[in-house]
Image (cartoon, rainbow, N blue to C red; front, side):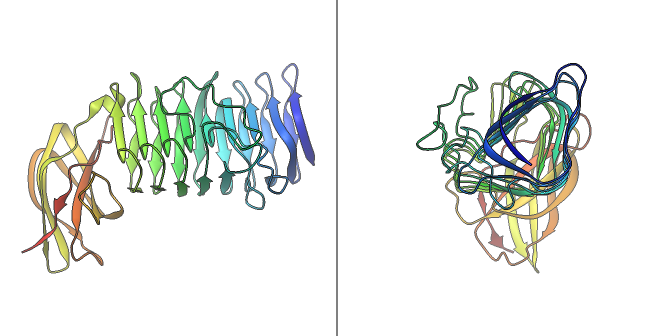
Length: 327
């Protein structure tokens, strides 16, 4: 099935395509609460970067197959939906001619209750002006959102797991005023602003776990304007190498129990985490000699993050890097 232009379903009708879909122009699909289902793969015409916008109001959105796996889309915006389920990988490329100014956008004028993209993929090369020469610029008022790989807005929630997010002119991921977002096991590097920004009041309970975040122009994780309740990073961190393990100490600020994730990073220029070494759980306060496997790490620097075990999952920024010393 070839799609081009706007598709508006009136009343309570649904929008369903059973077979493979090819975008032969920029496409938007809108219902008044009816479900939207793509029953097979979704691709753009080769090297065009045509984007797809979906507005289901209170309906569910399903992508049964991979999105952009053969020919990448130039952006995917889920403006409103109850749930969004991606059954395959998602590949978005902002360097193509008709691409949007943001890669994967969850919520904008509308609200998305739960959007789950858990099969990985790639989101690369998005620019604030959109694709060249056909980009129309970015109208998103959220600071730092334009040119970003993934953007959650308007309280929208969901999971981004297993993606490579790189070479975007903005941040890798922006969570603006949204709660309950889960960023899991992604590689976020080489972006023009932060790796991840959590910003604005109401942007709480956002878990950033087991990712590789490094070599971005800004902070690896930035919590601004009360994002994630400004959860402090661990302080007084120590790291020693002994018998193939890294022994970690430090202090966690807060109440209750916390997951501490330990990362190896090659430089001490900025707090970031390239390689996850392991995790452990501690109560708030000081801890010593907690062990994680060193793997192939024999030197360099160690950073940590903390995330509450219960309650709002407010992941902190990275702690300041400390040199890994032999003991």
